[in-house]
Image (cartoon, rainbow, N blue to C red):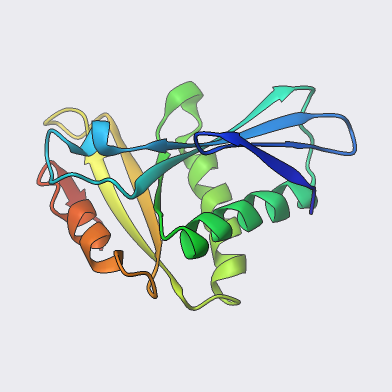
Length: 159
């Protein structure tokens, strides 16, 4: 795992051995949910970007990201949502990576629960993506956050 610093406003920075610079952004999602749900003050979108360098496969990047997310989930009781949109034609790759990372950690940490919902931008269902929601079951706001996530009528729940 790499050392990281929190730069403020839920922005985390870390450097790899190859001198790549990563930012992990956690963005409040009340802007997305506000039109459809109650206020979702404790739900954050996960966005990982390599801002400098050329990323290459590195197990320590995964370990660092998971450590940061666990801290946010358990110590701060924030829930996280990960959008597997098709920007750049990479929706399937995003889902595979998310599932691989989550499943490896899920076995070790039974406190964290995951939910999946599909969202379609059009009525024909041609522009769809999945949203993954993860939260710590031991947090005081777990039920409220799950209710907020599932109260979005415009999003179909995936079985």
